[in-house]
Image (cartoon, rainbow, N blue to C red; front, side, top):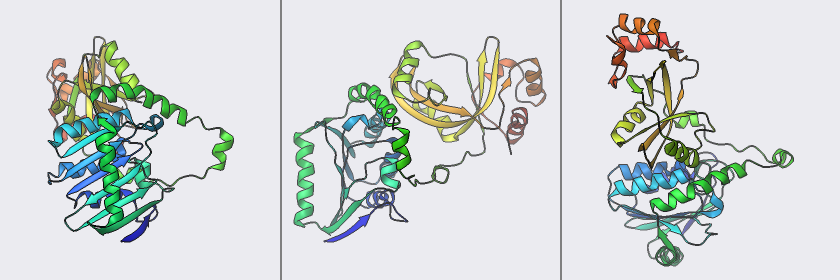
Length: 343
């Protein structure tokens, strides 16, 4: 057996290790005490590749640190995976495992240590994990697999929509409590190096999508969003759609122009997508959260604005704003000038 350390320093990160193993394994057994959507990226990409392999994920709800949104994301991935992904919840309330076990035709690779399936756990400093590599018949590796399988079969339950919905408020409270570290204690803690999100995330592309909204979500939907997301605290706006295709049109564009139609006129703005989620509400289940592009302005829809849009050929009458469409270069330039979008 070969044993190495992976501590998220330099080029050795758990994010890179998991990506490589998921792209080459025949089976994967993953267990984590805490889970966030950022921790699902490697798994999501591997499942999207349509490569045939079997993945079992065992998730803990320890101290409420797992994101409710991550559980909802897992339900979506599980439904799309058509049997390739199984997710179960550990019944032990103190379940604290961090285990990643991969089988290929010739060998087994296991990671055991401190890294949860979260953005920080897979990429930030302060973690310590052992990588164990050996033949399929290695006694220690076989014992790890048998321990996982025993807990999977006897001490876990399938992830359901009911679990994710009921857990969401607990997860929200846990995040708020984690911020309440006394200033005196915080001064003693060193700053953790994290991967630069500006490097990891795709930059907004050339905007070519125009959308509109003229109906507003009911109080039940507003409460669900408040209970299950942090969007209100971050002052992000959001929209909900009845179908995934309608929502994904904006997700794929990453940025979009929006006509917010009101009785008294409304506004036009340029917005960047910040988040997405899926949960059932009276108004739909497919959500997109967004924020107005920094440095730009939102333009009131009045007679002057409508005249500028008519003169530029974007609309013939105000009703034309209530139409989803792709925009050509000339119309993008018109809106960018109107909204004072930074170069």
